[in-house]
Image 1 (tube, rainbow, N blue to C red):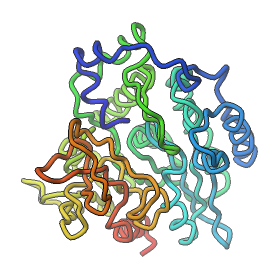
Image 2: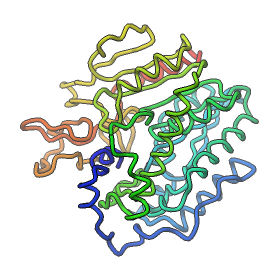
Image 3: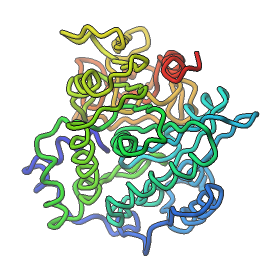
Length: 384
């Protein structure tokens, strides 16, 4: 969804896209949001699962799998954990985005939790229901719950979730470090500021086929406005504050949603800890002389990969849904008018909008350097 946001918020495109949604429950909000302020994480998971079961508009026959993907979850190590991390997903995504990361960190002895942002997990229209306070409060509440169980609290976030956890960490002395994957600090879009205004005029920015059980494909204007609120909040904080504790940030040079160079500059200026690392997927950035920056090539022709996408960093190649041989391929990748090849073995993969002669690019949804990323995380967190 987010890869379209930069284009869809251009005013003329927005005007053209403001059609009435189909007469489907997908585009009609639930009666209420799921609660998130339970006294225990166990109760929160149980209540969220029941709410999703009652309110989700199911896309496929395997309802249990859809519920599992969208329910908050916890991974506990074999021994009592001294350190814990709370993961927060991005706009339109789900707690399941952190499944591979959670398994790896739990094996390293971490207590790992992944929460559900209000408005997610059920139907795209439910993004019309939350306020920005709901998103900030769910992070604060579950950071507090986790801090009470471990000696050392970390936060992690993808995209919009990266904004939310960074804003929280700059206010919460309990946070020992951050893991940020494609954090949405700087959208590559000059029109995002109009999203709150549009939300009073039209309900939908994008109406699309829903076939991905881990991610909404359609976007209400309210969802875009909430993302804008997260951008405003984190940018305001980063103008005046530094995060002196360790942080890992990943970014693709070819991210279709964000400005990677602005994120890199902010890392160098506002995240001064010498243990911190910035993992850059692409060509070596110019005028960067910082030993904390690691550059990994994103053009891997032997694996039919042209560029890295906004989302692929989180998923192991073995992931059964988004992995190299996973069951779900995102064909809709900004190549209108180009026929999808019948033989998927000829597909190339890249960021949204990747176009090349005689090649059809599906979205890259897994990280060929996933094990290297885990090593970088261990280096930043002191596990190496």
